[in-house]
Length: 164
Image 1 (tube, rainbow, N blue to C red):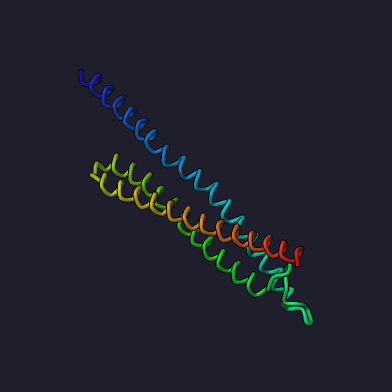
Image 2 (image 1 turned 30 degrees about the vertical axis):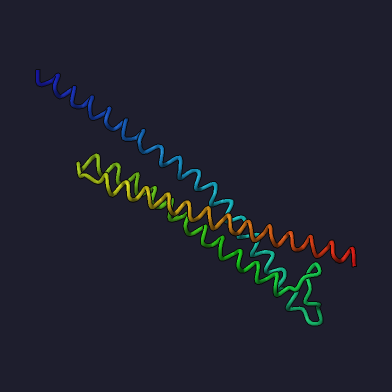
């Protein structure tokens, strides 16, 4: 009879571990999505930095006009600096979100194996992750709006030059 009870306990533990892995997979998929978004953000930052460096090189050349496509280079650089700050904030926040999600997965396993009641802590970590993700997406949205508004200003300036 003891053999059957031991086998049942092992079967239950296997089922519990399988369920735990299933529960832990959902946050891991979220980490994957965060990784893709992080790639987009870092590519945008790289483009902003490359563009700013090119404009700074133009500014360093003696006798060069302080204009870029009919716009003041210093003003364009200020906009790029502002955009880079928002992208940096988004990168930081989305990385924090991934870190919190990773901690959620670790705490799920700690909770299961050590039999501690960490449910409130796990919930708080998940909420912190979602808040951080929301803030990152908001910073990204603001950066995109700045880029779009800057583009519209350039289009309007070109249209004025054609009329003038």
